[in-house]
Length: 170
Image (tube, rainbow, N blue to C red; front, side):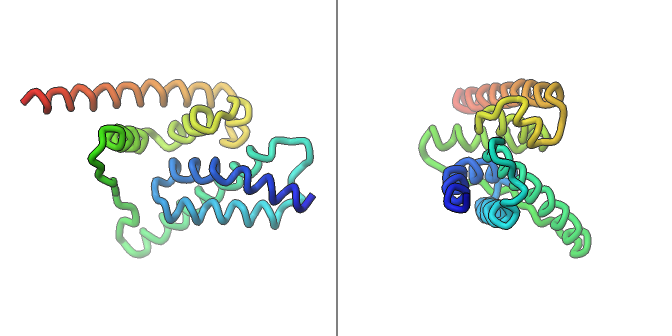
């Protein structure tokens, strides 16, 4: 089982990293979260039930690690009296890069639960049932979150496109 577990973890690394990046929007923290999820999966391998969805199990570990880190940072910022998060965006000269930046910014404006739902279902390809299990909510709630996130994201992206057209016209 140990070699199979290692292969399963390695196979999930790209999905874990993408999920972590979309959750926290910080590359260094995302890498830390992926490492933490892999270590926890290895150290808690006895808790994984064979025949169940390994990817959903390890994504849940990553998600829980993310929320633990956010709670820790929130406590730390209250103690230090300073904001720990800064909005950073890489500028790019190519149109595709600008579009991705706009999408990233729009994703960042979504409520955390909607962003998470959209990433799980839309980007990672989880079923609503598996995504609901990871997010620890009802399937109907997951469907609602995804629907609202898609609608909001579409509105935001249309608004950005309209603004870009106006700016280009002037």
